[in-house]
Length: 295
Image (cartoon, rainbow, N blue to C red; front, top):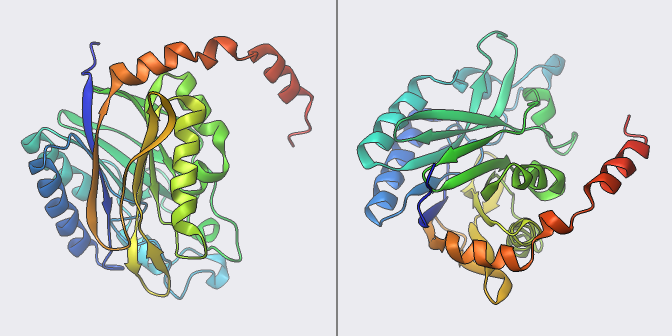
C-alpha cells in the first residue's frame, strides 16, 4: 500500500456536555466539519468525548458500574459510530473519538474505547488496557480492561491509538506500536487540571514521539464536567530535523481545533539517520524481561 507523504492532523480541545450523548455527538459532528473544512485529514477527539469522562454519583454502590456509562455505552458498530462513519465518508476524513463501548457478548462488560473511523468503514477500536487506579479514579469499577494492542493501516501510514494512562505511564505500548510500523501515535485523553499539567501533556507527547521517532498527537478535554475540570493543551509533536523533539502545535485551555501538517518523508529521513530498530538489542531486552518476576 502506497502511503501519502503529507497529513494534516486536528486534535480537538473538547468540552463535553456531561451525560448528554446527543449533545456531544452533535458537537463532535460540528467540529469534524469545521476541521475538515480547514483541510485536516485525521480528526481526533478526547477520551470518552461521547459521554463525558466522569462517573455518576452511584458508582461503586455494591461495586457496580455507574448509571451514566451503563446507559450511554454502545456496541461498535452502533448508532453513534455509524453516524460518524457517514460523515467520514462524506468529508473523506479519518475520525478518532472516545466513547463507552458495550461488549456485544457480555451485558456486564463495558470498555473505555476510542474508535477509528475511515472514509471506507470502521477500522476498529482501541480498548484502554490500564484503568486508572482507585480510590482516586473510578474506572476500574465502571469498566473492564482491554487485552489487545492493535494498529491500523490508513492512507497516511500505520497509526496506533492509546488512551491516557496507557500513553503517559506505559511507554512499552507505544514501543510495541512503533515496532508494528506505526508512524503516528494518537492519545485520546481526559487529563484533569493540576499543577504542571500543561507541561506534562506536552512533555509526555514529545517523549513518546522522540523515543520512537514517530509523530504523536494528544487530544484532551477542557472545561468542567460534574466535578472535574480539564485543562486542554492538546498537542502535536515529533522529530523535525535537525531537532529530535519539536512541538508543531499546542492548544490552550478553551475549546479549539489544534492542527499541524506533518511530512512523512522528512520523518523517514530523520529516522534513517538514527535507526533505533537496528541499534536495539532485542534479544538482550527480551532475556531481561524473561528474568523479571512479572507476576
